[in-house]
Length: 541
Image 1 (tube, one colour):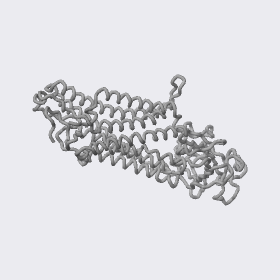
Image 2 (cartoon, helix red, strand yellow):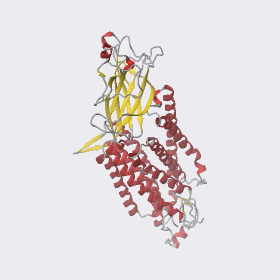
Image 3 (cartoon, rainbow, N blue to C red):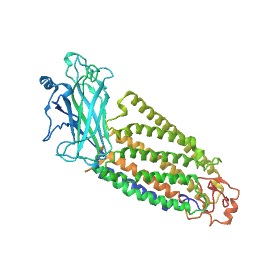
Image 4 (cartoon, helix red, strand yellow):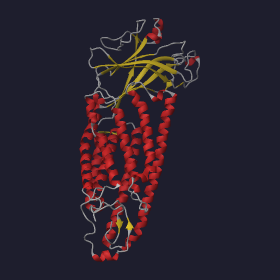
């Protein structure tokens, strides 16, 4: 009887395969930790205060903070008052990047965070729920002499969340509020060398525009982009892993098609898992180096969502197909109650992503967190997805417990078998349990390394080497899931070996009464069988 490779592979070969995969896993972590730089870089900018002398503002005029065409500048607002310059004639200008530097398509994306420096004044305090109105424009160019080309223009509102930590009295006037960082801008492609931001804070007392926001002294920005060195390492990993998964997937399905029976549910789900892994591996990001594809961030989120949804569904079906509870399975409809929350949670996250990054395709200054309604909506989507994740985890643990309990119950019939058969089936039970533990370990490592990447400073010193922990997390976890999918497709492919052909007739007679279900869906070449059975005679279909 032919089964899956995991059932018929010798222990020696299985150990060699396991060690090889562990070496590749270690290599994936080392590539990120020792070769790749930190995934992202944050650059701080202080806006330059430019003066717009023209009474009627020109939409086509751009204000440069430095360079041969730099604007007329003031240092403080006290200087503006002395020169009788109105607030509506002040433009905050920020050039990205800093002087003598260039942006690059290898940076992949650019996220900009805004922070106001607001001084406390007894007669100009920040009102509760104060909203700052910003007239923002973004332009680009690819050399230092050509004209600026407008990329986006928008009027945005940002809610101020500031706290004054000392007593509000005249003695403390001039001290600064502690204000939260505000989302400002995100673009999904860095296709140009230079970017210019012009920000106005228009004041209209009659309409209560920018009234009650305190005395703003400066505007600070933090620009975050992906490191070019990390991007190259990331692209190289994708380019290497894509053909690896694609080849094993084609090999796996070819073996399935050579069988005389139709594929069973578990085999179809494993194929779907391989397809989703291939989809996330395909290095379409290479095209972002030559094309201004601003939708790459959204596309990347969708690819990740499809893979993780497929992975979570696979675990449910994988456990369900091994429950051995006499229930007729091998049909996707049996699992709709378990897979439904996964699909619903993924859909909630997709809607949230579309509300954020989908809108940013046309307006990079948009943020769903900028308004109370948007914040509540976003939190609702995240909470619903979190509840679905918790329910999923609890149910998966329950299914794993059921599988292990059922397997332990079947072990009571093993002593009645001959020594050779008993060792064979004990090996099958051990291999299945080991695979389940590997699965749980992969999930746990993902969570653990994510937490580590959030709480540590980003790198460790190891002798003379600096280990980039965040980079190691990205490359290591990405490599781990590729290796996991590779191992699943290899181990659950139909084997050409046949167990039982060389059994003695005495062994068959001694165990003719046995009929014990075991671990894996059978991949018999002679026809469809649903459950691999421990039996002293050949399993008949």
